[in-house]
Length: 147
Image (cartoon, rainbow, N blue to C red; front, side):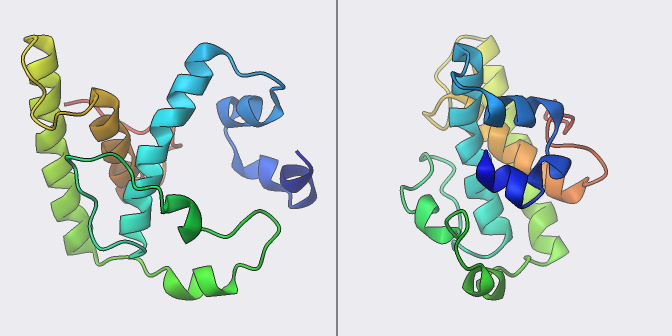
């Protein structure tokens, strides 16, 4: 809380995000959603060229926590390393994730084996991340992941 308040970060959060940060105890659905959002952060690490390529047939790597600065720590090295990928790469990734999400949802609806072998939320949160980057006029929570 001190970190969010001292750095004025609450002005950059949605109502839902602020509720999670302020909560002393998360509701089960908040906890579950928060866990899946890590997959979106993994995709954003790719967007910023911090990782070579996310493997969409594996969950997020444990090294994600080492890629971002710790709260209150120096951010200079992170900002220097973080370079937005070119638009053509972002669009190609968005297209691939859209088609992969379609296949995952279709298999789920038909009660078939999921092509990635992962929970549907992994692909959905990665699709949300890339769509948010390409449609930054909407909030994270409003970002379209429909297929």
